[in-house]
Length: 180
Image (cartoon, rainbow, N blue to C red; front, side, top):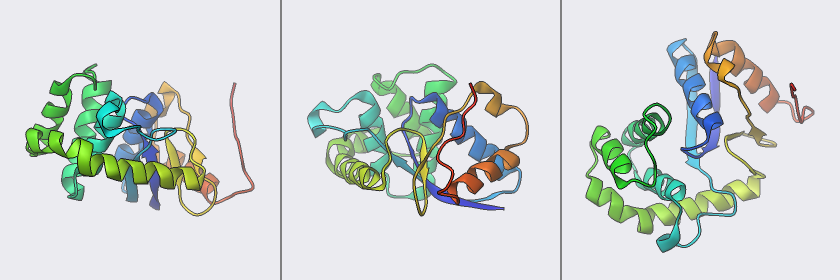
């Protein structure tokens, strides 16, 4: 199976974390992933000098040009927030993730209000044009799919769940499937 799409996310959202883990596991199960992770803040990130901690972390992610380092930074930030309980409001969290990604933390911090903010503004505007309203959402052709999960997503095989997501992404006749 090959799964592709653009995932709109933020680092604090538990559903985004669970989707991250699902895709990680699916790749371990042999699924070929062609997934782009793009930060999204509903309404945009605001002014460069007044971004929330979440928007700052997403701007840091957007500022990293090299895909493999961006992936390691993303993994580090997700892990620090959701497994370690670290706060994005603490500069040490971003510094630790930067070290793991072999990035200069000072250079990354300087890029946040400049290149990172500009890219995040552009990414949020594009997401708005596509109809993204919440994270995590996956977009391909057609309507973006907002993903809502439970902790049960971490149990069982990832590939069958990803096949369901893939099917719904490809069928604009399905708008909502819910369980109480």
